[in-house]
Length: 270
Image 1 (tube, rainbow, N blue to C red):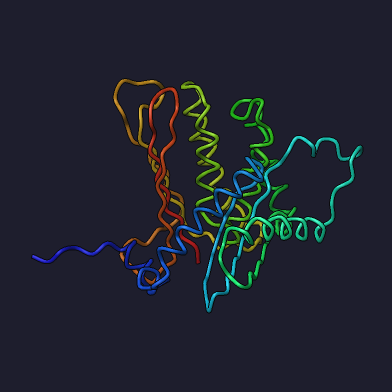
Image 2 (image 1 turned 30 degrees about the vertical axis):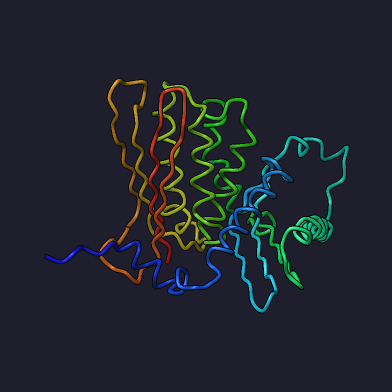
């Protein structure tokens, strides 16, 4: 009897066949961890790193960052303080990162490229999601309204395949982590309506989306029960028997006062 192949590992090998065969894989992994640590220290919790790629060629370092800035409380005081321009923000980020990496990384030249995802959000999709999910602000997002706006922004970027699905899963974990047990059911209602809007309602409004299906599984002691249970949400189609399809699988854990909860997410994009 032969061993069964895992479809997820086969898909990853097709996307990046030389990911494990490179000679500088250990060096690159160490420097990626260092870069993520510097980002967390410098920006604290105001930024999410969607994608981070690092290449070393002939003692030259090529760094590409795709960033998502969270909604801060300073946005409520737009009339008092002027917003920074797009070019000023990107130049400010590049200068700070170059100064931090120049002394820590041994390379002759550093080529740095940053991309901010907040400027790619479409207002039409954001307004549509806001008016459909406005009723969850007081119930599910009480005292966390800025987290509600971040989820709408990330989901609008996800339906256009502009952001990694890992950032979407991290936002879901942040929503669930502080919820009391009586609001676990409303969390699933919110996710179900959000997935239906992204996959079914947006194409009816003649808005182009790349999402074809989402599958979400949550394991844990839901609603404060003594035994763990699993809840499944599946909207759209997710072909699990084909290798060539663009399906992302992610798993993570959320640690709460009721125990550890396991999150699993499948995202199928065209």
